Length: 114
Length: 115
Image (cartoon, rainbow over all chains, first blue to last red; front, top):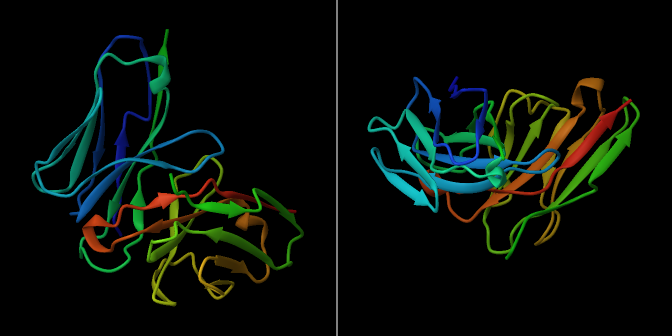
């Protein structure tokens, strides 16, 4: 069974600060996706990382996939109140083939205080 | 921008009743998925579907569940005899590609409440 552990579970910081959240597993994933989920809504895809060591940037958000494709991080620079939300990581199966279901972490609840 | 849609947004049913949750995936996508999220818990994979058959299913997806693509646009999840523990948000997702590049786009969900 593949598991994804996200840390921290909760993070509350002031506007303008930087932060990093982590997504770790003992399993290898063919790719890893980051989503943001608002209460009562479906996850919204932010980014997909596929290659070990890959770094992708989305404005103030930087996503990195670990070299061994077992872990990932999300770094937010100069956080803003609009960044507040639940951030989920989800891994696609190690086989890399077929319509793999995603394994989700429990998420990091992020609050950016003005 | 194309998006996945789901109906109804909220379904209330009595234990033992059958429910059908409906989804319209993004039109050019080929792979379809159902997930559920029990309140306060993580999103869990139920089943994936490709080329009119189940591609992968989890342990949760037992004989009480079934999926169907009855026409070219809809994708449904049926629960034959609902239990209290089936109460959850059910999300449909679709992706254009398989494998490592199977970026999955989620619908807004159906909140199922079993009384």
